[in-house]
Each structure stands twice: as structure tokens, then as C-alpha cells.
Length: 127
Image (cartoon, rainbow, N blue to C red; front, side, top):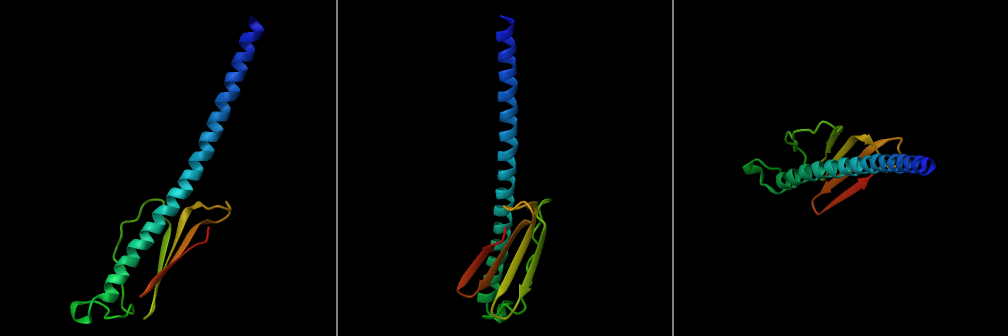
């Protein structure tokens, strides 16, 4: 009876260790995907403001079919959001957001770029 109990205890330790390892792995994957989604949403919100500015006439404080004087509004940053860079030209706005979590290749952080022009948006997920 003693050997059987020892084997059951050993088996329970192995199963518990495996469950903890898989749980940590799934949590890390979820954390990276969550941050990627969060920074895509932030870039999309900035794109919405840029489009609204572009479409609003100059008399009402808009761009009058130009992005040239667009200034992004202050959006509260989440603690793990990283850095946001906005480049403005007359015909387009580019929003680049770098996160803090390591991306798919585990060497570089999550990094997205959203290019906004009058008729399209191009999203590039670099990592």
C-alpha cells in the first residue's frame, strides 16, 4: 500500500507542475495579445480624430481636406502601453505605437503602425 500512495503523490505533483507551467504559458500569450489589441484600439481612436479633423471645414476649426495642422488629443495612457509617435503630412497621418510586452519573436516589443489617408487606413503589425 505504501508504494501505491507514493506513486499517486508523485503523479499528483507532476500533474500540478504541468498545469502551472501551461497556465503561465497561456497567461503570457494572452498578455501579449491583449496589449496588441489595446494599442491597435488607441491608434484607431487617433485615426478617428484625424478623419474628423480632415472632414471638418476650416471655418469650424478643422483641416478642410488636409491633415497638415492636425494635433492628436490627449488620450490617457495605460501603464503598459509604451510609446506613441504621430507623423502628420498634408495627405496622411501615421500613428506608430510600441508596446512594452515582447511580441511574437520574443526579441522585440509589440509594434504597430497605422497609416491614415482620406479613403483608407493601412494597419501594419510588426511584431
